[in-house]
Length: 55
Image (cartoon, rainbow, N blue to C red):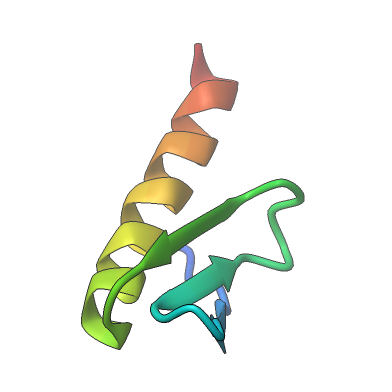
């Protein structure tokens, strides 16, 4: 079974770091200090978001 893919939106914040939203998953937001960290955090946020509907 193929894993679904999701588009993420990275926004550079004035105070530093990046905020991340997942438009296809309402309310799925996270942040990271670097782009790499923000992407990793987005992957985790997506996983947890989807898991919340499986329980």
